[in-house]
Image (cartoon, rainbow, N blue to C red; front, side, top):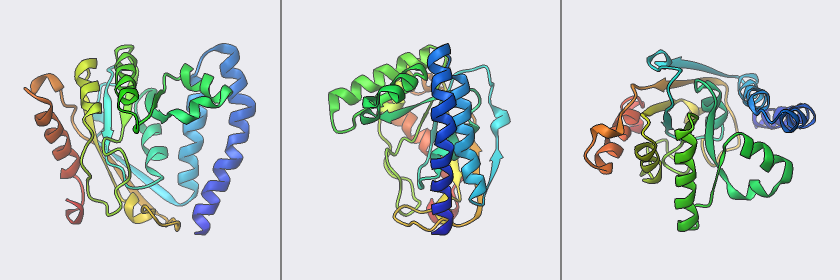
Length: 234
């Protein structure tokens, strides 16, 4: 429990330079890069200070000049601050629409091409996917947890279909990723954060155009992610 409290405290303190330096600079220059790397770097630093070591496998398979939709399994609150900073180049993500009601934060998120999402409203969710298509067409990566929520037991949950429509319509490859170890370090429903090692595996990109229907594409991505999980979670 102490490690989790220290992590949250670090993130709270780290928010000060982000707010005092990152936001004004971004709004003045209209360039999101400094704020993006500052916030994701501090997020990752907090995880490392909490005693979590991260190993990376297969990132050299990717062409850093290309645009991808990254899809990863999701079991812990520390998954996003591990995954997002390790994506080559800047990535967009889906964000709860309520955060776009905060004035300065909303401006920064729009500059970062983040996409608001309301999963309780089908029409709004469809609009979010269409907005995400425009983001990847503009050459910005998108990172998504296709299960839509954290798995409580470490096994893969059913995948939502929207992210796969996004990849197909955007005309970009999907990079399946498997995050291993975070379920043991900080599982859903627990507050105790343990030190240890997490491993992020980047699989070979998958071209949606090679599949005749979306169900086959979903199955292929799911199998790639599942294949690197420990046997007890497969």
